[in-house]
Image (cartoon, rainbow, N blue to C red; front, side, top):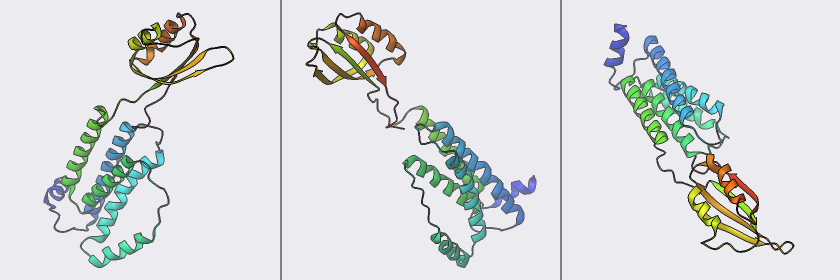
Length: 231
């Protein structure tokens, strides 16, 4: 344990000692820190683009980069040789989410730090990155409140601002916008469509019941949409 602690505290980044113990320590640390980054991605991910293979790749990339840095060491010839070899590889999977690309970059940096035996920097950077990631996730930093529902119903006639329908929407919604009012020539009814920001989606059934209590309001439907655009 004392030897491991000496290795951890004595490396200042000026040279890489490619001893078996140093390489083993760097690979194990890359494995642990790669999992920390991957778990951070797992717990803060939103939307429909989740991929189990991508999460696993975050762990493997950290180990691979650490291995590459151990191979290179201080040998500039080896560095250029690996650059040429890696340039041959063509990655055909397009990273659609900018956030995914950031996590890949994080694993690359952590892997480089571990591979060059800058262990303290690697651990400190990982802890700080995870704290920032969870802070952004918990506080919903940068998010906007989108319209999250669509209301449709039929009503025989025009709806003015003083109509009971408007008072109901004001009580149940933060905001609402009329999208369309299409008149039917067969039964003289108007099909209304509103875009809503509901106060509480659990109250949707109550909203429907109160709208149904208004004479003439028929065919009421509410469609909720998930907040995928900001994910």
